Image 1: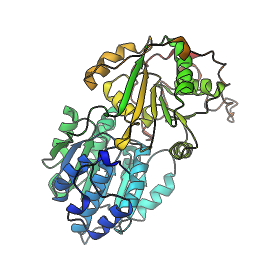
Image 2: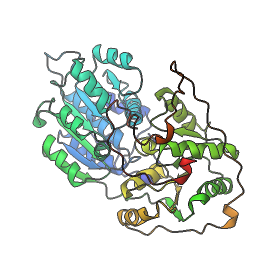
Image 3: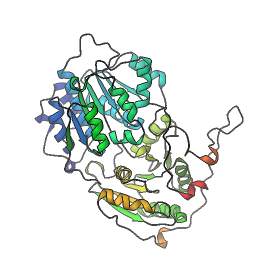
Image 4: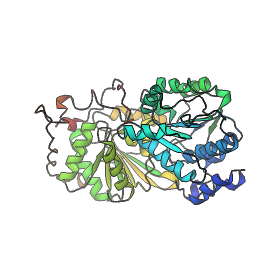
Length: 448
């Protein structure tokens, strides 16, 4: 939750009339000056008015809504007839990683408020999370599927809710969660009876309609200091043939020696193929996708954040909401299908005013995504030639990991020819039916 001075505004947190326990949490976290989105949203939310903010990840929006949330709870005591199982505030996030990050930040900023904080997300700790919520909480943070599961069971209800926060609203649409969000909103008090805050990377028509439907005349805020793509990201586009992608990735890794690199691949099978090739050529890497068990995912993220792991290969589960400091390079091994996804991927580097590099491969199967990406970011991507010195001779990929056999004699986790494209849980980490997938980007290596 840090930011360099060049990323901050001239507005300081002590200019706001904050409760002493909230101000103390900010001081402990090292916060003195606001980021642009904080400077714009806090005056509105602290006055009790709803906010719909356009903000990319890494701009400080989490601290913005948490400061407003804790301040509102401090200034507006709970109803006398409120039960412990009736949260006073709810924060909904699209992915488990983002929910965990928000929970971590809430514990830091709210350390002196006395507010009890609970967390609900899919993939693990079902009974543990259920019991924590049943014991009572003031702030509940979670992903839609698990939140609705516990709500339907009567573990908690939203009838005494005072603050509602929806983070990454556009991602909710992408993951098919919007009906779940409306389900939650319909079980809250009327919009005029609560403070509501919505944040989204884009305030598209569908996000605006959602805000109009479930918020109380929200003020729309967009930080003028924010660009569609970060100013300090040096972007470059290569046009390799399909069979040149692996050698090019290895050649660039060896040449650039990234201190911390994220490699984005469009499919889960593709991540495994890239990982095996890097391992076979002496580059240690790990895979992060929705198929990786939650505890292992958290361990990998911790290792990556703390520098024990230098290369992380990921699907779009890692494209939003994760605070991973000092990512030096982002590689789009597969180009994403939309400009919005491209922006979120490269937003993993050059965070909080730092600089970074975004390197993309427009191969035979994904080059036709380039015009849409360039239209979205409103600029032409600079290109570089795929030269022979960037295409080293490569060793064979490492063998795939052995699968454990279940009691039927079949290999556990063996998805067969269909790979991961037709089933499994969504990367959002909720035990809900996946949406039909768009046509894959066609990474030919994944079929090997």
